[in-house]
Image 1 (cartoon, rainbow, N blue to C red):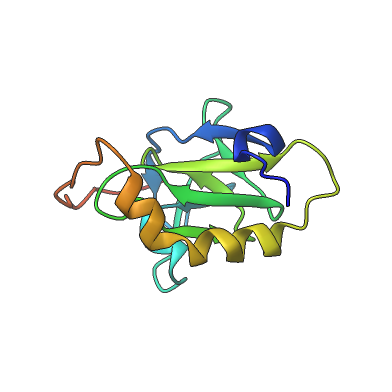
Image 2 (image 1 turned 180 degrees about the horizontal axis):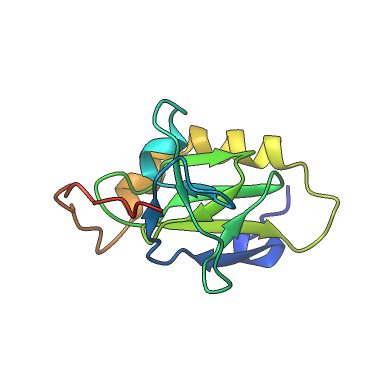
Length: 130
């Protein structure tokens, strides 16, 4: 079996701080945060911005730091927050659901081997109203 490093087959982009907006705003896009990697109960939005990092349906999203480092999801589309990173395949012959499920199965390994992870205290953010 040949071992391949993720960075050999994926481009990794770290998310940036995103300014949320009210759900009723026109021309909004989804804003993906750590909680969205688990479920879609509280979907948030932001205005599109060229400075944001975006995930698409062929991306894998991973919590990069904080208490949830190692949490993985895929198939989501939108701007990603600063504690997330997006993995985009460098070639089209990568089956994203397989890699996504594999990484999800490695959650404990990712948690145990991450270094420098910090626990961030959750602070409620205010929404911009249109």
